[in-house]
Length: 141
Ligand SMILES: [Zn+2]
Image 1 (cartoon, protein in one colour):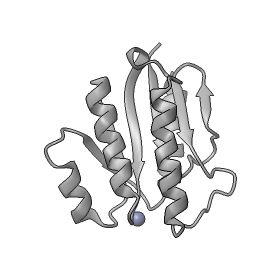
Image 2 (tube, helix red, strand yellow; image 1 turned 60 degrees about the horizontal axis):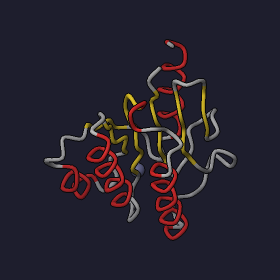
Image 3 (cartoon, protein in one colour; image 1 turned 180 degrees about the vertical axis):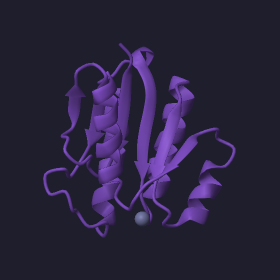
């Protein structure tokens, strides 16, 4: 069974971080409150730095990964989310999708251009979108 990995410094509505069968692995934060404001940039930056650590320390062996979804919001932290997506994509060779809102879009587009990383638009925060695609994947599996 191949695993689809979801990474977000926000949450995925209806899900906590962890395994859902072997099909889905979620590394996300702030589901508990669900409505963390995107104002505390230091906090988000810190979370974003921890998430690659989890990835690299092997919660999901790369060879078992089918695809990565990585959320990138607005403000300063999106650069970190996009560089995480780039390194995940490059190191794993697996399909990687950035899930993003349209805030700061021109700056994001500059960072993504030429990387071959796929892009899907979502609402600000991405929680509902993540929750929805995770539910659909679990329903199909
Ligand atoms: Zn936004």
